Length: 500
Image (tube, rainbow, N blue to C red; front, side):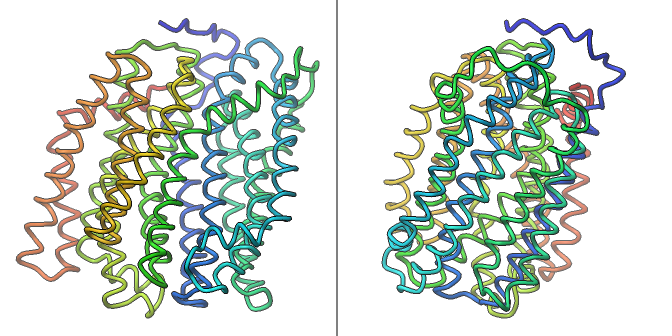
């Protein structure tokens, strides 16, 4: 049992409810997702589905790896910063972490700038030279932008330790919107690489908003940390980021496997993956972010950890089931409407169905996202690096084998299975009790959601055209969830509302 911290200094009445905090974080994720969708639509309409888009999205995959590490960092350090806040040493700990990150970010950004062209060639494989050139140009901007996002995550983590989530949410949301505007303004002058500049501006705003608030509150002052411990702090970051980076590494593998299927396939898989990740990020990621600080104060044992995973999974997977059903019926139309006529017909239908093939990945990713923060609350980090290596290694033969059998859908299934290995490993790392409760609970939940989706959308697709079937199916799916509320959904909502 992890001892709960003394929270007398911060009364429960002063803390925002977990539901409100989750809504703010989730809304920010939705705004960011819409901004990303707008950028993707502009990218598709302006540059189509070509060697240029393949090259840029290959470089963008590296950016996503580092941004995933930044998101993971919010989970990694919140327990440490929460304890530091309770002991009056938050400012010193924050400055020490910032210094540690800069010692990594600056050399890494310089090395990427020097070796950008070899990296571009490596990432694009057999694609045309234009793809490698665009990837190289994008990396020079995207890698520093991703490290700025890491510092923005540090600012958000400090605010989370102070039970403040709205400021960081506003920063990320404003950054997404302004970044999209910059991309739109510069695209005629700088071409496709203008999106990289937009992401750079996005990162600067995401950092500036929480930084200004923290400075005004005097939260960054105070005595220096007793030990800078730059090496150990970086190790905690690398250790904590190992699993998210491995998961994103599986995505990079998927892009590399997709490149062997021809021009345009990398772009197709990228858009499908971004759509699927948006669906789970707004719920599962938000719940993971807002749960770290309260669970650190409260403490949890194996049973409580398992129940937390199941409750959070209910809230997240309920949305995933509806989205998968809708994409199965009208995904092609949605894709064509958002991305333009070049993504209509067979290409749009393929992309929409690919989101459905990513459903196992979405289920596994939800399991990862709600379990991962508990590892740092419980202090069971030793298994993270071996587990990350295992998941990444498993993805290679699965990706190659399933690609040979089913092409892009096979790659999607392979990434889902590799993610499932990691999610189950995290549950087992907490305790045997956690694994049994969480794995069985999420398995039952996934089957229940899948059954509701098939009943609501599959049956109607046999009798109605796609658009009416999708609309009516969404209504029936909602009614089925209401009917199933006694099987855990009501309890899950009550748990989330009372999390703080």
